Length: 348
Picture 1 (cartoon, rainbow, N blue to C red):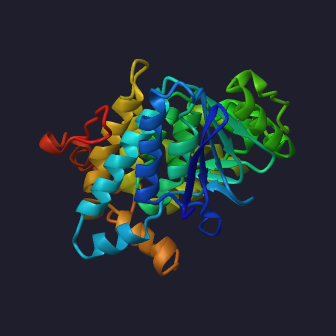
Picture 2 (picture 1 turned 45 degrees about the vertical axis):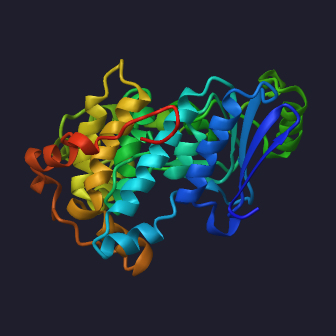
């Protein structure tokens, strides 16, 4: 079975992440396997619905498997990471645009790469312990895997807040922000999956009322006021002037994150207008990630958080105010012949 189990059952194509001990971290090979399965089932009339789930209680998928990316990047080889991201982003787009219904069951941590697999599909199911987040700015990266598309379409300025802080969403907030569609108690999941397999019909899903967790709604006015500011410095100033406990916690989080990553994230979200597509978001994200190991805080962020675990990253910019518009423009400039492309084969 390895890290992923792909098979047909009844009327369903089944994709199960099986790296529970690694919180189902998404590897390059897993991305390629998911994409290949989607291509295989697209014209298969015996497959009426796709079901994506994961083993273990702790996580649907807590992010990408970045250890090898770090090792190769530190050695000066940026090609592996760029291939990983390109193939992953093509897979993310295919899930978002898939013509058959896709149902994801999202327990525990759903972060980074897990959002890319589970939160772009047509039917996104959360449960009591679901925790969704895009915490990339904390490791010097931007919310990617199409995350900026979801964040840009979240109500008010909640997407900007979530993208810059990496704040976690429980089931109610995940639905409110547009990262999920329905709450279903985890005790009912196996019956729901069995019904999908037996019928191929998503009407078999019977959503319930999620637990009351209204962080985003509770702080909506304060979030909109602060994160509606056009600059990072303005956001910080608004939070500091507020002085509320929520504002203090939020400002403290922003002070820890990579200034360059946050500046680029803010610019990317502002650039995604109402007519933007997930492909627009992924292409913009790829411009950052293509350059990230050489020109951003990404490798340093991984070192501090995952390798040395000293939690003391040495960012390229000491303060938010030090990030110039030119620094952001350089990270997000078109890539020319290296621009991300999409194709029906999943390959360039």
